[in-house]
Image (cartoon, rainbow over all chains, first blue to last red; front, side, top):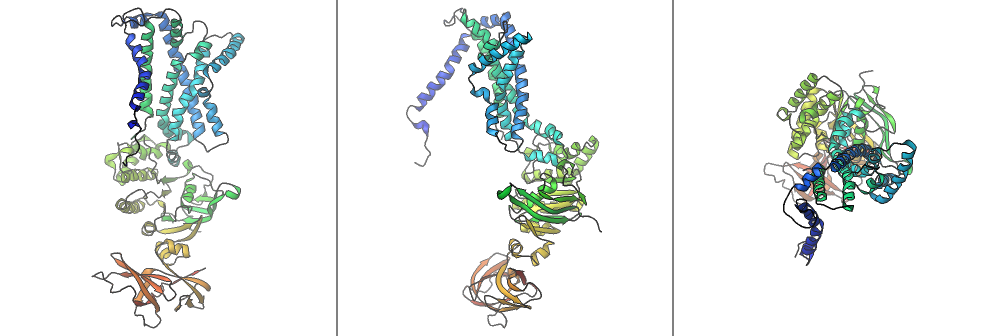
Amino acid sequence: MGKSFDVTSLPGVPFVAGLAFLALYAPIFTLVAYSFNDANAISIWGGFSFRWYEAAWANREVQAATARSLVIAASASVIATSAATMAALGTTRRGAFRGQTFIYVAINQPLMVPEIVTAVALLIVFATVKVATGYAGLGYLILAHSAFCIPFAYLPIRARLEGMDLSLETAAADLYANPWQTFRHVTLPLMAPGIVAGAMLAFVISLDDVVITEFVKSAGQDTLPTYMLGQMRRAITPEVNAISTALLGLTVALLTVFFLLTRKRE
Amino acid sequence: MSDPDAVEARHVVKAFGQGEVAVRALDDVSVGIRRGEFFTLLGPSGCGKTTLLRLIAGFEAPSSGAILLDGRDITALPPNRRPINTVFQSYALFPHLTVAENVGFGLRMQGKPRTEIETVTARMLALVRLEALAKRKVAQLSGGQQQRVALARALAPQPRVLLLGEPLSALDLKLRKEMQIELKRLQHETGITFVFVTHDQEEALTMSDRIGVMSAGRILQIGPPREIYTRPANRFVASFIGETNFLPARHAGGRVTLDAGGELTVEGGPEGRVTVAVRPEQVRLVAPDEPGALPATIRDLVYFGTDTHCHLALADGTEVVARLQSSASGDPGLEPGQPAGLRFAPGAVQLLGD
C-alpha cells in the first residue's frame, strides 16, 4: 500500500491501449507498405517496387498539383504567421481588457465553425468576386488558406509570448532601448522559435486541406489532396499510396521540427 | 543653494486601482538621495519600496508628485531616456545573448561605436571578475555569476544612478555576504549613486550611508544607520530594526513613571503617555536591592554563542529582554526564577510618543 493508484494495473487497460494504437497506426503502415507494391491493384501484394513513386514523380498532373500545393502553403503560412504574430503581440503585450475572451474566441473561429460551412460561404463570396473582377487566379485559395491557418499559427506564438519573462522587456527599456529596439533585439529573437513553429504548423495544415480547397478552387487548380481525391473517384492505383506516403513523410518532418521548437527547455 | 540631490522624490503618490478599492502603494513620499551616496530603502514586503524604485526607473508613472534627477524633472521621461540603470531581483539577463553581449547591450542601444562597446564591456567584466566567461550564454552561469553580469550590465552605460531591487535575496548566505562587500567596492570604485532596496535590516545597516525606513507607503525615518538604530523615530522603526523592549509609561518634566512601577530620568522627549524603548544590549542586570534598579524576575535564558538573551518579567509581568555578553565559560551564573535588578545604560532610553 501507500503507492498512488496506478490505472495501468486495471485489467484490460493494456488491451484497450493496444487496440487504440492499432486503430491509429495500422492503416498508416498498410498505406506505406502498399505504396511499394509492384501490382496494379491497391489491395493485392505483388512484390516490392518503387514503380509507383516513379510513376507519381513523372506524372505531370502530380507535379503541377504539388507545385500548386507548395506555393499555396508557403504563401498562406507566411501571411497567416504574420497576422498571428501581430495578434499574439496584441493580445499578450497589454493589460487585461474588456472582451479579451471574445477576441480569443474570434481569432480561433476556424477551429470551431464547421469547415464545410466556411467552404460554402467562401464559394458564394468568391463566386461573386470572380464575376465582378474577372480574376480567377490562385489568390482565392491563398486568401482562404491564410484565414483558416491563422489560429494554428497563433496558438504556439501566443504560448511562447506568455511564457516569456516580461522583466526582459523592462530591462531592455531600462538599458536605453526604445520600443522598436526592444522589440527588434529582445522580444523578436525570444519569440522566434514560436513564430517558426507557428509557420510550420500553418504550412502543414494548408498542405493537407481538402474541403475548403475543393469548394474554392477554379478549374485546373487542383492541389495535391484534391488531385488525389479526384483520382480515387476513377481508377485507384498504388500511385495514390505513393503520393500519400510522400506527403506523410513531409508532414512528419515538419511536425518533428515543430515539436523540437515548442518543447520546454531544461 | 548647494548641489541638487542626485535623485529626489517630491510628494509622490502611487495609487493602484480606482475609487473605493484604490490602494496607495506610495502615500506622499518625499526623499532626497545625495550624489555618490549608498542609500537603502528598507521595509517589509508591501511597504512600497519597490514601487518607489520602479517610479525612479520610469517603469511606472506616479499618480501625483514628481521625480527629479540632478534637479531636473524627469517624471514624464520613459525609462530608456533616463540615465538610470537597474539591477533586477530576477537579474532579467537576456537568455539569447552571451555574457559580453548582455553587458554591452545598453551601450549598443545608445548607438555607441563598436570599439567603445568592446573596451567598456571588457573593463566592466574585469570589474566584476568575469573576463573568462565573456563568451558564455547566461544560462550556463551560477546565481552569483549571473548577479555579477547583471551588475556589470547596469554599470556599463555609466548611469547617474544605479537602482538595486533586492538583488541579493536569491543568493545563499555566504554568497550574499561576499556580494555585499563586492557592492560596496563597486560603489566606491565607480562613485555612482546607489539606491538599494531590501527587507533585511542587517544588510541595510552594514552597507548604507543612509537608510530610508518605509512602512505602508510612507517613509518613516531617513538617516545614517547609527541614527536609525539608536534614535528610532517611532515604534515601527524601533521594532523593525533590531530588537527593542517597549515599556508603557507616563512622562512629565524629565521624570518617566513606568506603568510596571519604577521611575527613570530622561532629557527631552514627548510628554504625557509615552512608550519607553530600550535595546536589549543596553539593559544591565544588577543586584535586586541596588537603589533605583527596577525589580524583576529571571524567566528564561537563551544562549546565542556571542551573547545570552535573558528574558525577565517586571513586577506587573511586562517582559524585558537583556542581552548579556557571554563570559569565557559561556555560563552567565544566572538561573530562571532568580530575582534581579534592571538598569538602563545612560542615554540609551528613547521616548516614543503614542
